[in-house]
Structure formats: structure tokens, C-alpha cells
Image (spheres, rainbow, N blue to C red):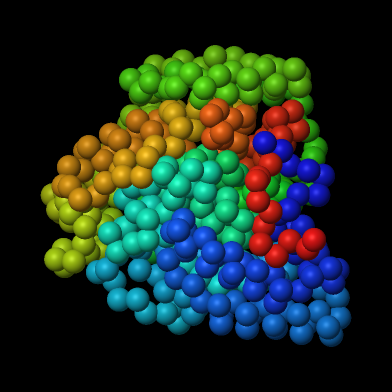
Length: 476
């Protein structure tokens, strides 16, 4: 699967709009049409064409008055979808996939949404997420069911599954996504996309910090290209004005994307311990390791028992934090899905002493990862244990919370580790099996977001990927 020298991505479409090869209105009309034609995929839960067209018309009017600043607005006029979880965007609803929340339009932009718009993106809808993000699929009881464009019988992942489905189907080139336990990276892996979970503190969560989750959660995008991910990071990172210091990412990431890193030590872990990793997924890791070895990097094995223990501890931390957080958010359980209610009840039973002990485990995980990165520069693991499972594999019509956590950990065994440690992690496609993308996960020390993207560029050059459909509005 491959990326051409001029990929059909968000930066490419923004450049075409800025150069007059097409217009923002034409791109928006095409995106709305593609969204309507793709309703069977369930990627978009709320469509607001009027909002998008108004924004696009204003952009075109501005271009008629004079050229745009491409550096400041690299995604000028590019249609964009927000996720139904996380940052709020004025004029769009945010109900977290739940009938328990009244569908009112947000009256103000979050800081992240404002940065999206300042980069030139034009919002026109909201993507599907499971209720309160509690699954690695995106099938809320209120609907729609998000399906994988590569095979609609399979999930596109979760909780940013609607976003990933929309990007893979070409409705948009990139879409807002959030990640508290793999929710950017898992859907990216399911759909053959780029998914970066940034370093803790890099992306603003204000002014409400409603998706804080004790520092587990962060937000950015899923995208078709590495350069879109880099540009989004450049335009959104820094000055978070939140509880964490801003990580120093070392300057603009996009500008250095093609500067190949040299002489790194790459720690590789193929074994996920108790979780069986499918042969194709293991082979993808081994192939990626060989590509990087040939590029001059040193490849070393990482102790799978140590990493497996850290991953299991991280899953426990994730589970407790999610339960306590939702318990603090929800009072009335009469109108939520059974699993959501069970999560809340469990959260109400967790004592302050247990929560403090959980925080100390998280601290030890973060410290262990710092020590690991004294030995290796980057860690490479499987993103998924196997192919995207069928629709219905992560049901929420039951009250067995531990079963849900086990199912998610079995599917993405190393997902929560980066969230608990606060370090950046990147999922990228690397090869395919039976027509479905394979993926690898790169994890780095704090603030190594740019390094991960540059290393991924080396992998991409050796094993490129492409999409069966171009993005809506791409000039012919």
C-alpha cells in the first residue's frame, strides 16, 4: 500500500485550494456528498453541511482578496470532522455516543478546535464513537454502527472508529481523534491510517479539560499521510495552559520529516505474553525491524516478560481511571448502556486509597519506561494482535467490566502502556494480509514525537501504502 510523491492528503488538498486548482466550497460539497453516499459505513453521526459550506465560502472569499499564508494555514479549506468525544467545537453537538446526553450544539470552541480552524480546517460534522469511548469498536446503541471501509463486516476500531472510517473512505483526508487507551492508534491500524498519540501535555485540553482522565487522554487526528500528522502536530501542539509542562518537541516537525534518523537503537518486542499475536502481525514487526536494520539502526530484543508486566499494570490503571472518571461524570444511570452503568457502579466503589495506589503504579510504569529508554531510543511492538474483528466483537449490552477490559487488551496488548507512561506512540501501516492492512507501533521517550514520525518515514519509503479511493474533492 503506498504514498506517492504528491499524496492525496490534507496538505495536498489545502495547497490545491490555495493555488486555485479547486475551491473550498467545491471540496466541501464533495465531502458532504461522499459522506451521504457512505452512510452505510456509519462513520458520521451528525452532518452539518450549512456550517461547513459557510466556513468554506468565507475561505474562498478570503482567497479572492489575496493569497493565504500557507505556513499558517496549511489545511486551508480542507473539510474536517470532529469526534463525538473530547474537544468541543462551536456549532456541533457532543453527546459521547449516548442517549443520556441532550444533543445541544456547543456554544464555544475548545482551544484544540480553535487551533484546528486556525490551521484552515473547515468542520462539517461529527464522527461515531462508542458510548463514552468504552470499546475498541464504534457501535453505540443509539447508532450508527461504524464499519470498516476495507470490509464492512469488520470494525474500524474504536473509540475513534467513525473518524478512521471517514478517512479511509475518503470522506475527509484527516479527522479529529482522541486516545486514552489506544483510541487513535487502534482505529488507524484497523483502517491502514497514520495515528499519533502525542506526548502528554503537548496538545491543549482546555478550557474545560473534560477529557483529562488523570493525564491518560490526549487528542489529535487520524490521517492518510505522515505529513498530515506532522502538520497537525505543528499547528496544535504547545502552550497547553494545563496541568503538565509543555514537552519540547524540538521545533517544527513537518520541516524535518524527511531528515532520516541515523544510528538508533530500536528495541523490538514481538511477543505479547499471554496474548497470542497472529503470525502476519508478528511478521510485520520482523519485516519492519529488518528494514530499519538495513537503514543502519541497531535492532535489539526487549524482554517481553518485563514489557508484558508493564502492559498489564497499565491496563489495570486504565480500567480504574476510566471507572472513577465516568462515576464522577454520570449520576443518572437509567438511560445508558448496561456496560456504561456497570463501569459507573464500579467507579463508585473505588476508594480514595485505591485510587492513590493506582496513581503510584502509574508513576512506577512511567519511571520504568524512562529507564527502558536509557537502553533503546525507540520501542517497536505490534499494534494489534490480529486483523480487525467482526462487527459485534465488543458488545456493551452486558455488565461484565473485566470481560470488556480483557477483550480490549487481547486485541491491542500494548495500547495503554503509552497512555499511562505519557510517552508518544505512533501506529502506521506496514504491509497487508488478506487485503487488510498490517501495522506496527513505535513508542518513544517523552517529546520524541518528531523522531517517531521521521522513523516511520523510513519504513514508509521501504514499504509504501496507498488507498483505493482518493479523498473527496481532490482536483482531477
